[in-house]
Amino acid sequence: MKIRSFKNTRNLHKWIGLISGVFFIILSLSGFILLHYDSLGLNKVQISGKFLPDIFFKIASSRRKIQTIAGTPGGSIYVGTDHGLYRSRDDGNTWAELKQGLFHQNIRVLAIDPAASGVIYAGTPGGIFKTEDGGDYWTDWFDASSGLSNGEVNDIVIHPENSEKLYAATQGGLFGSEDGGDSWEILFGQEDSEKGIPVNLVRLSAVDPATIYIGTQQGMYRRKEADKNWEPVWENRISSVLSMVSLKTDPEFFYIGTSDGLFKSFNQGRTWVKDENKGINQVSSLLVNRNDIARLTLATGESILVSQDGGDSWKSVNFSPESDSGNLFSSRPPAPTRIYRSDFPSPTFIVGTPSGLFLSRDGGKHWPEQKLSNAGKQPEERKMDLVKLFTEIHTGRFFGSYFVLLVDLATLGLILLVLSGVWVGIARNKIRRGKKNQPVGELDTEILINVQDTADDLSTETHEIHDMIEHIGNHLEKCKSIYMSKEKKEIEEIDRHITTLDRKIHNLMQRIGELEKYSEN
Image (cartoon, rainbow, N blue to C red; front, side, top):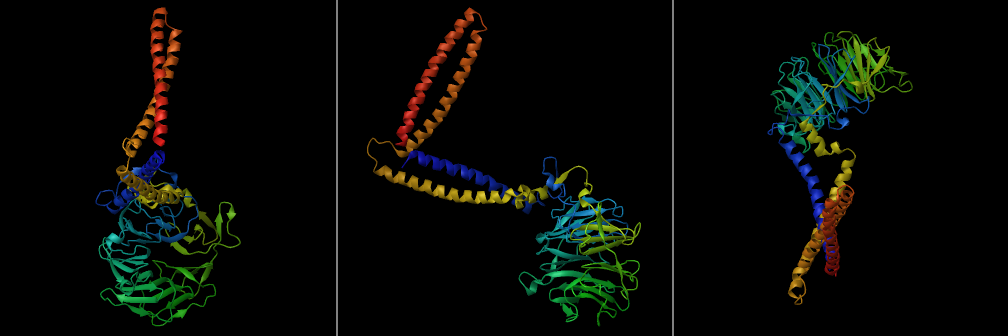
């Protein structure tokens, strides 16, 4: 067995183990902190973003998929996108991005407390976030640790008479909370399936908020808060529910938007009428005016329609998106998927599409695009939540596209680590077995390995000494040209000693070379 080969394999094993160990220590440490961030007191800790990548503070594109729009009576408007949450306090003239404490940027739904407009819940694929100051900072995060076993949230409803009571429609079923989101329990879906039944939307009856309606792929279900059993409703009449509005009338009026059109009931759901307007096909969003329930607005896959008489007649709004350079989608406008109407301080239509956000203040004549990439920073100083930073590191997003390569290299490193460790172990065993049959006078293999290591170290050190001697010699030559005769004699004497030392170092290097050749053979 070649000593050099054994030594190289051992060094390879050592360095691969060190590099792979550092990588996995980072993952383990970040994972531990994410599991115990609350007990460690890190949930409100922020760090300066001065040395962090700009990707965490800038939006790559102004056009985001608009997934939800909500507003307050005071005029604040909130827009949730597939990558970010934005707020306007001046009727859409300027926008600020909100991200302090918001670990997940995929905002699926927003719910604003009717009794306290500063309290907002944001539903994401990673759970529900809560703010109590209008979105400046998101103080709470409700996920599996709170009982929300499936955190991919599709809809949220706040009880109009008790703000502590919440309902969340998720991919795993319907969850309810009695304490403002601190704890959750499953209300529908889990008992029927290990993974739960996806619930797309949840609504409370406007006439009786104790009655809950939910939409699933199997149809609509209803129950009273005090009951435990759900009953299917409107079977064979209503399917593929996308949106729903309940009006506080006697009897209760329902409007339900589906993939097949708009369905209306004016007798609490006992009978249904499909709206025959040719322009109404797939209804993705329904909106009722707070102050005048006869004023309805809906968005289809192609247009926006408005009714002033409770849906008896509809007027189409000309949705023609524009950019700074003029009409942007003249051939095929983007489909409006979310609508919102603000009447403070002036009537304003806000339309969300998969291509961005558009706003009209003149009844639909002009639709300038809202450039969310120009949203003002909130706050001005760049800061990042510490837990978010560890989340980005643990999931690999912090490292960008190189993370997959790092994982591949670490995996390959582990394989090499195992193989080299096995090889070193086998070699060690051969050495131990060979000791029994080793001839008298022959050097022990392990001694040769140590000799080889010592020879390498000496070789490195002698080369360094040789370089130092050359450096000193150069300085002595300069000194000879500067100092007087007496000093020159002393310098020459030093030079003679240095030359002798250099010659001995050369001899030592030759002998070390001979020792290396001997240990290799």
